[in-house]
Length: 283
Length: 262
Image (cartoon, rainbow over all chains, first blue to last red; front, side, top):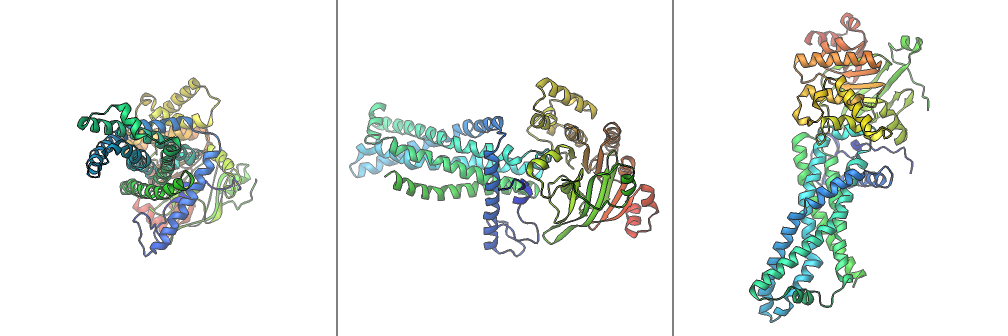
């Protein structure tokens, strides 16, 4: 591929009046066909993905910005993710206990808790929480930079905004999602055990032994690492929506909302595919 | 790659005097959707010269600056910087050309997560890696002193007035010692005193740095103060280009109307 290709952010902007407009973000207007807008959105996303991929593999690398984003996306999301995981652990424990008691399978509660948390609830809830907190944050931050010409200023300073702004955010999402998922799983298990032991005392050692009985890393690692794909999706969608924003404060709000809605939607759709793939390749 | 291009009117004398235009826009067209913004615009600016681009809102003045710095591409026509046509340049080559240009955006476009000093240091950090931290800090202080903002190093952009933000934006635009300066509405939204201060600053910089400057403005008084030549745009075309006196003497109806209303 020739390197004469532009890095201009203007090329991923939504169409202007008179051109077909976007179908995926509720902006269809001027008589544009929704189907055309749908394909146009994907076309511009494809250009965006290509630009970001090129920027990601060519030096210089923005290590300082990556560390800043790891902190912003990782450590600042940790309390929310841990608390959500804890709440889910408690609810699963209470609901599970009630349901399993009806079937005389109360002893299976630790396993039910561990498997449902680690295989699905932890990853998807972490994905949704991060797409809400981080997706909205990235979408709004980049959108505000776009409408105030800060991204143009970066380009005018002979710097690549994809390399400087987008790559570190996406990488941070990819790296942090699995770690945050582990945190959600951990807090969920701890609080699930606590909820259980308050009703019917059981030692943590016994609870863990019963919960992980017959399981190994082969079972638990793929669901945890699938969240890296959620991170990829959240990062790409949020950065894409932010970088193509037009139209002042309204545009910033729209970018933040669309980032959350579409990142959540695509993360859940990806989850369906990933679960199937995990079942095929890690039976 | 050297490119041949037609030198716009009023540049012939300068080229004959051995001062060819460092910025040359030739027959540039730009359309957004159904809206034709630029319709075959041609103009040029030589080293040490300031051209003011005037015109009504929506006549493509800011788009012209965006074409010159390569943020937008013309649909047809060419933009040449130092004789190099921007079309078809590799990313790295375009980057090298952009390093020779300073751009002051209409609303300054300061990075709102960085302090004033960090904003000015930003281009230096990325393009002058050989500079030590102390050299960079000294350069930042010198640039901010040049625009009269030396006492505001640690302030955030949100703590600054519009005029102060433009001064910092100007310092940032000058950080890499450009030989072309593009100013988009440098006095828009400012009170008359702040406008006058910005005009004086631009004049001072012009005298000290001998740069080629293009100033997009609505402000005829400001244009008269800082520019050597004026280009009046209407409907994406240059209606008249020349000195302020030539503009005054013009019989063109739009030029007369513009002068009367300003």
